[in-house]
Length: 191
DNA sequence: GATGCGATTCAC
DNA sequence: TGAATCGCATCA
Image (cartoon, rainbow, N blue to C red; front, side, top):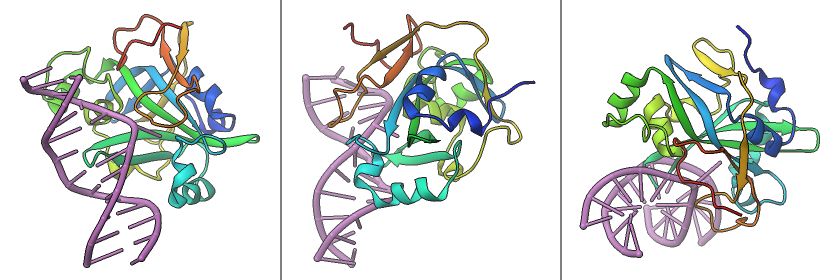
């Protein structure tokens, strides 16, 4: 079975984020089509952790492309990123929403709800549904055991619009969603 | 050891 | 639309 390796993440973060739409993210028996991502760039992006956190800059320096960057937000939500290290710049791809494919029962259990549309429609909900926590931080996961990413099976139409929930860098259209998907955290702004 | 804040979520 | 929520990074 073909799957995406670390080489996929040795390019620029924006291309990675866009091209991950439609891929299938697998994590310990759960899987979902990636329908929403965001790109963050190490340089020149005020919204990126590297802009204001020395520890994030250290993380980039000390880890390889394809490593998981997981952190706790609002004191309660784990957010899952993949480290990108390209020749022209590094950064992260934030996984924001999935269309559940398998392991849906486990997802519902962890989320405490039965509706499939809202199971992974947000970065915090996604990690809770998949059972991803801080123990994944700094770990490689591509092709490791039951974890990995499968490439797109069919062509998908991708929409770009501004990233969500940030106070700086809003001018960059670095949020990517599958056109018309009902599984995204919010419908993209029509521009 | 103290402080401030946030790449969210859910209920109203 | 608004408030909860609290661990972590950062700085003193």
